[in-house]
Image (cartoon, rainbow, N blue to C red; front, side, top):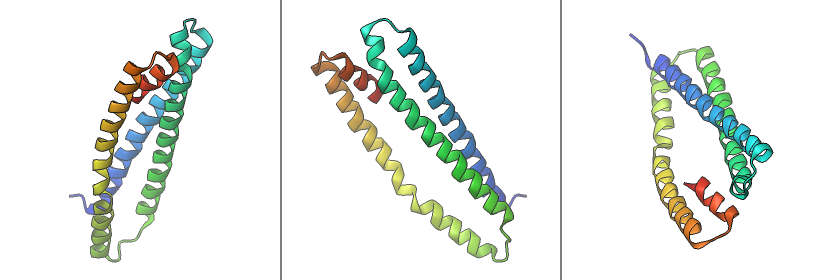
Length: 137
């Protein structure tokens, strides 16, 4: 039977996997952006280069940051001595509860970005702003 520290380590390993996928997708976007810049001939393709590059760099940085922080946490947890298991359980409970409220912010942000994207896409004829709108969705 696994104890809480094993579950916590597995949780962080899952976070590393998720961050790796997220960062890999960011690298893919950066590569696609560079290919679009080099091979794209239409004005619409050229307009998408910078927005895709920006999103790709953000995703890559977020993924790398997630991998590093979770790997460091796993290292600390594996080397930690469990003298006071109850204190660890309480600290872990407080840690998880401290970020639970953050889950509502992405939902609100996604709705706001979606409204901005729809507005930008339909009220402007500028290809660059339409490209930004596409990437905000």
